[in-house]
Image (cartoon, rainbow over all chains, first blue to last red; front, side):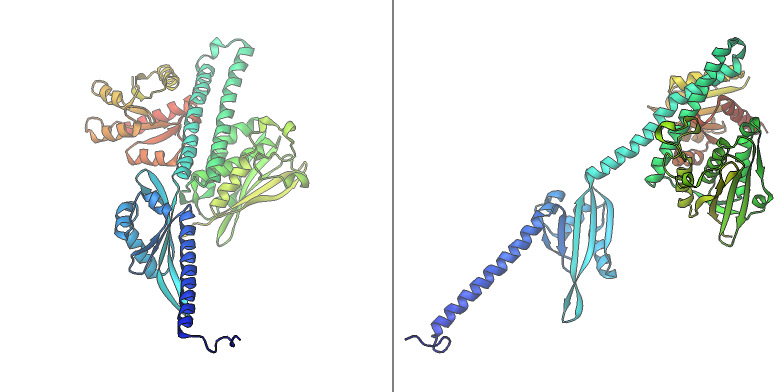
Length: 380
Length: 125
């Protein structure tokens, strides 16, 4: 007859039982530790864990391969990463401030690494305690090489496209200026004119494309300074004056703009915006005027460009400021003589990067349109 | 007759400016890179230098640094001509002592001559 369990178990059995449990628990623990290790080792990203000293506790396979180090003491890793990154000091700083840190472009031999350091906090009985730091290392070499190739592409494209265009523009211009006598044939003179205009238009297209790509990638650095918008507007009006007056469109600089307080922005870029808005107005205005005026408050100056041109329907107004958009045009009915349709989009990117806004105030078919953009006022 | 040294490696560009400046009654010499430019300066004494940036053997900025460091050539006004519309180049050029930077594709021949005449008139004052 068996006895009720737990009542008369011999000491020997009891020890055996205990041994079994310990064995099982140890196996479980080892298995979960080994799971943790294999989890770390299967990570594509390099992983280092440090204690608070800081000294390395664990590294994974990836980081050992990435750094080409078999063994791992922090001294070794720290030494290997120098001078790209002062790892030990940065870990100490991160622990000291209890904040994580990211280093985007650490050069390591021929590799480029991204390194992320974060303090580890453990909560025991409601008490938060720093137990060390975790360091993630990612090899971003290929990514960076691609990025650089893209940058270089635009740099080279801009240079290589512009050079032959400069020669076409310049030579056709020389023929027109210095050899007009030899160009007695009307058709031939017109051909030279067209070659010249084509080169100028192509240069504008190249510039627009490169501007968009640089602005979208955040590659254009603004160089803000204090200046009067009226000065820049005056320059634009002088440059475009001959073009507009030839077809009977008057350019007007309203006294409100001359009286407006100075702004703080990139002067060249603001000129580009005004140039785009006035140039656009001119494209759609056959007679009448284009007026530049201003309104200001404590923080901003608003510059308004008002024309007496074609205006737009409400439907077409919604399409403004989009890439390649000429309001109302389908792909096949685009008016190529009106440019790339990038002007307003570029202006929007520039104005927004300057901390202002751009938009359409009003537009009425047959009566004209008013565009506005705002610029931060200069701080004294 | 006023003298121009044009340092430019692309025949499409230097032939254009050679014609332009001859038509405008300047004497013009061409060097195809910075090193040739520095060598030419030993015998040719221009009133102004038009200097391209991207050139092999010696680029424009290196030549600019060298000629500004040499007392014999430091006072010759230099206009940097480029087609790289990059503000960094504009800034580097002015830091190295260029009078101004001109984007070739943005300039009609008349603009280039106008700028050169302006710089020369200022230098003569």
